[in-house]
Structure formats: structure tokens, C-alpha cells
Length: 120
Image 1 (cartoon, one colour):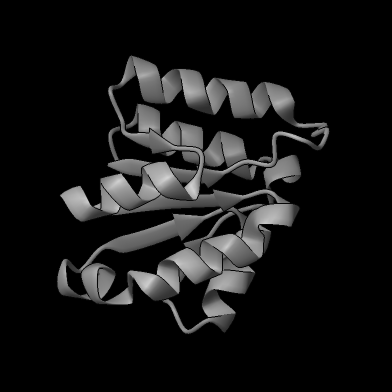
Image 2 (spheres, rainbow, N blue to C red):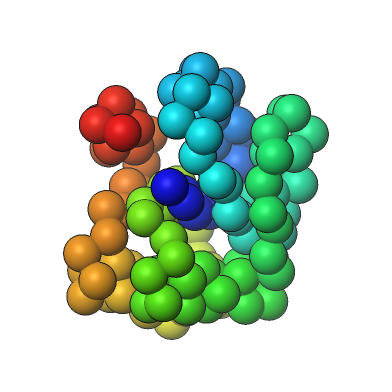
């Protein structure tokens, strides 16, 4: 199973905390993690193995969207910061639309991610 990880700058620490709280599940289920670049750096520093793509604004969101469209990605955890502006908003909306089109579970906050990870 592949889970994509994306977190806006104000949510990266929350993503790392979430992963640390669910380290056992991720390890037991042998889940492959893929992420946007900067999120991936933070996740790697926390001791997780993750395949980091480009940063979100440089095309990382689009790369993950492509993985969703190609059937490679099984779940997306995208901790969004709804109170900040994001220049790559079109890529974000495309990713969310593709998750809906391809019926891929998408969590945009830790509460929803909690439910999804427990269902794994």
C-alpha cells in the first residue's frame, strides 16, 4: 500500500507528530510512503523511509496527482492550511479532484487521517 503525504508549511510538524503516533501501524502494514519534497525532508528527519518528490509549488502536488491517476497511490494524507494563501492552488485542486475521480481516500486534517489510518 502506498500513502502520499503532503503538508503545508504550517502543518508539517503536525504531519510528523501524526506519523510518530502511528509508527507501529505504518511499520506493521509495510506501508510505502511518498511525499512532496519539503514534507519528505521533515518525515525523513523523523526516521521514516519516504520517497520524496518535488516540493509542492515546484510540481510535487502534480506528481502525486499523477500517481493517483496511474493507480499507484492508495491514500493521500494532505494536511492543508486553510488560513494561508498558496500559489499552487490549481495543483492542489487538481489533486483533490483526481482523488474523487479515482475513489482514493483523502484526508485533509489529522482527525480524518486518524480514521483512515485505523481502517488500514
